[in-house]
Length: 208
Image (cartoon, rainbow, N blue to C red; front, top):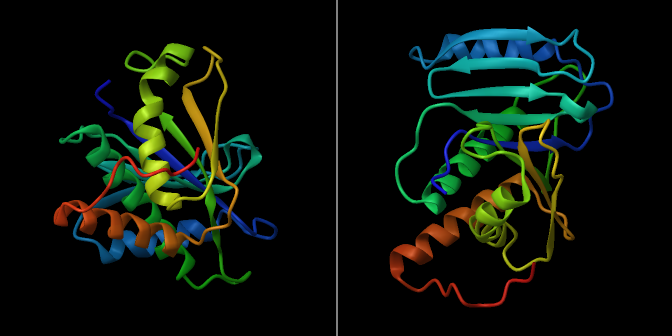
């Protein structure tokens, strides 16, 4: 399967007291500081367990999303990505984690926001390409397992897929060990450096 329209969500560890309206100010400041990369904000903070506040760009939307009543950063890739599936996943996860790190560094009236690195939601926002079925899960699992092994650097993790045709394809992945966002970024970077050196052993045992 040629993966496209990949979405990744990392969850907020300390959601109590966080105001979605704060992200209107934060995202507006990003728009002002950019060279036209970001161009609009969509505000759905009034919708219960909804899409929250979105920063809109041509290539991807970034949002503080509360779907399922679980607050997190959702990176929604809209434009096609080149390369093989692992290169695409590396790009999307790296981008999502960089945005998590950037938000963690933003001043907020209610205190610092922190994202958990040990759990993420992986989605494909294309029902034609990836219907939410067991067959899609079997097709996607090998690539998703590889990126999870890279992110968690040897720690055990679980993958949970709900086979429900009414919803878009989604897999929840959770490590049994706690990770910080910065650790996951370092693991991606280390993996990339090892691949360049030709010393990455893809057969070594990293438990699922």
